Length: 189
Image (cartoon, rainbow, N blue to C red; front, side, top):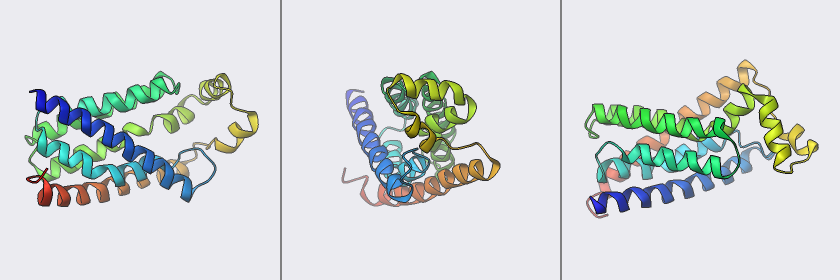
């Protein structure tokens, strides 16, 4: 039990680092600062951590904890409750999907990660669902109007499609890489 908790916490820290790498890669692709591509790159990089966690802690709660960790990060970084909810909801849903396959079914684990990949989409979703609240949050955090104008992404159909598709593509690639790594190295870790 204690080993499972420590493994889950380690995975949360590693996944958080993967999100940091995802933000960096997203910034290389799009330098507006809006984090539009960060969830996709986070999923690409974080798939290995996720799949190793499923292998090492095949119990309900580990993925939920990972999602809660992401949710708490968004709450602590003053993104607001709207950015918190996807982390929690996606973590719970992803855990439930993986649980359906007893954390061993490759397809269910992949679907689980596709859902989990949206756990870091809270800031963009909040920008689209409640743009005035999002702007107010940024102003309260001391951001300038020039910064706000630069990072805002209008929720047009093509941008929504690109956002969702990029996350799904990053998640599929991350899951495949993660499952390959997990299969080869899980017995050594």
